[in-house]
Length: 295
Image (cartoon, rainbow, N blue to C red):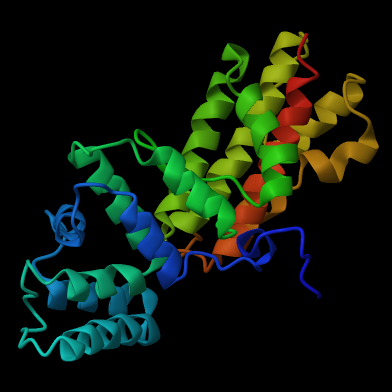
């Protein structure tokens, strides 16, 4: 695609996601908070040292992720010609710690930044700048000091699904749906192999709660034990929802049943982040629609 001479480079660049350069930009917004301070908050009460953390990454995310991070730290150490024990990085070595932050699993990076912002009195609130970096680099998250990183999807998903849903769940009648929806977003932000199935599960629960709210406030009888498909049938029978909206309203039901939470063997399902994001976006669409059915 030819470049548009009327637009700047950044606005035409393909999305980079939260690559090392994007992470460096985000860390640069934390005025008065060093890389070491960010890592200290992340390690505190979680990991004894770099070796302990690397072992945890290897166990959770696999050898490739652990090796990539380890090699980035080793390379940064080598380039500075500093003798550093790989189990105890010197606190003052900003470049070595920076390499670790730039190559750790993305959910851990988001958590490290969120923890640091909450723990340190920074020279300026970085929320707007971090959100700006995310938008310019095609990272589907925004940032607040109190909530940390929150998934919003790409520009179209944010405008057409997330914003209407976030507005809808502020309605007190959707309090239960809000609780589940917020939990789904939190689990997605945590992003671990055990958290992502829970995000799918909570997304489905949010839609079920929204359907119950519509039935309750439209004076349509239902059983609290009714699951998604039965609740939808009650909405259709009451002429509140047309049958052809089934796939829109129930988009989260099958993923929740198949991949949400734990199976009978108590082992977590393998849920890719892209699947959890899609299910959350589907929940947002359904909730925004169901909210309009309230009296």
